[in-house]
Length: 416
Image (cartoon, rainbow, N blue to C red; front, side):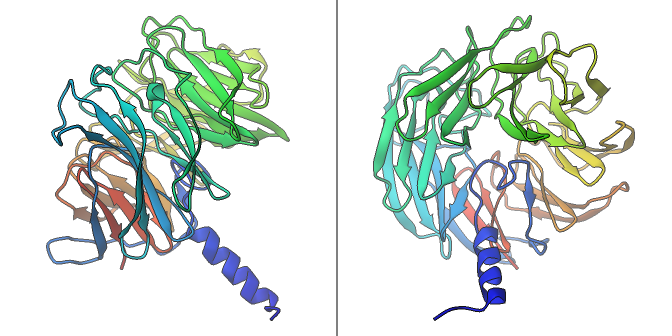
């Protein structure tokens, strides 16, 4: 039977709204087109809790969603106790989005007992997977990458050829661009950006990152943008952000920022600029015009903010406003074009997760499990505070009209 056009459009819109294919969602910058996400939830009175599923092991990757299924990675320690000096099973889990029931649970790699230790705010399964066209691409940093069939979890390819010496473990998530699987490999020495053929896992190109930063390690996730029809891969590392041709790895432009290191936030793009944080020890927020060529350090930095800038959470732009939350929980709203600060207000407790925007509201999830909903706009207004009571460092995902929140031992679906 041939369906009428309005019905087809509705079906397509519903399908699109149900997908959250990678870190920070379909636009890679933390925006959901869902206008009616929940504002209030509470496990103590079962308000808004659609389901709560246990998750074995330890991992701070964010969930991804497609075709009624939720996927996430985890690291299960040998013997069950998470402590230094034990081997770990690096795994991918698939759950039913409707009720949280497990569909499959597969081991991808075994991490040896002598693997490098991670920071207390990191895990051995922190990078978020990427879903595309029925395939799930997973990344465990220096421990390896793989491509799985999303339906049954069968491994199509896996590789451990691109190991490096990390500091504090893995972190940054991969990105798919065209026929490439791309990730940052900002190691203790010889930091690089690596592109693999997404069909085979074989290397297509490698970009060696160079800067004056003393500490070379970082954990940021690349962002692909379009500038007047030209694709740019924005990749932030220690001391420098590089814009690369994603097809070849050739550099288009760069901005140096001194000794900034352990850069975590994913850059965001709006108004002809990218916005990023320069990392430890003293992060600075930079707005950089993306129409340059070569070293544009002295010509293309439009403005900077030096107070209450995040080490870990990624920023977000809504309309003409840029929002970012410092790790101590102070939320900043600034004019995205000029850098003029509208407010800086205490919003959450210590926080690592990135901000989500939907329906004119900002969603922030702090490390103790407190979710704070804030009205977007130049005036600070908290709409609701919701405590799950369990440690949380992963960023939000969205499925249909609901939130997915990963905490230390569970994955929650939050609805109305």
